[in-house]
Image 1 (cartoon, rainbow, N blue to C red):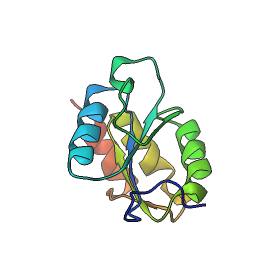
Image 2 (image 1 turned 180 degrees about the horizontal axis):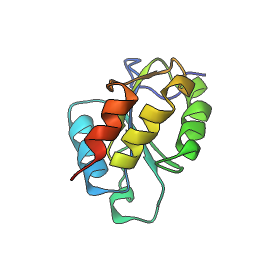
Image 3 (image 1 turned 180 degrees about the vertical axis):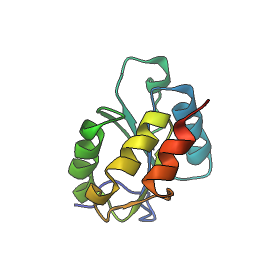
Image 4 (image 1 turned 60 degrees about the vertical axis):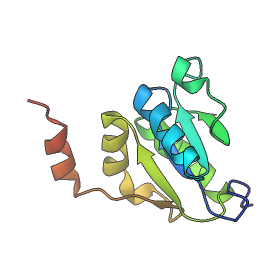
Length: 123
């Protein structure tokens, strides 16, 4: 289908957890540099998710298997490999835990899951 891309055909960045200040700021920075953005927000009513900057905002969980399922549904609609940008610890853990389920439609860089879990321990 390839409907989610920039006019020049570039695929979008997928900002996970648009409904937090980190997600909103990431979206603003990317869009200011001409990167098309699709946001994923668990709470569409959150003030950070009330932006018109992303091409599209998907209401879906930003953690857990629901996030993975939303990404699986979105993948066929992308023009090419999109970069995943998780903006919460829970989103990072989810991508790490279920990375083998993510379609080739996505690009992201994470160390092995054990290291990700260790990094999440803020103590």
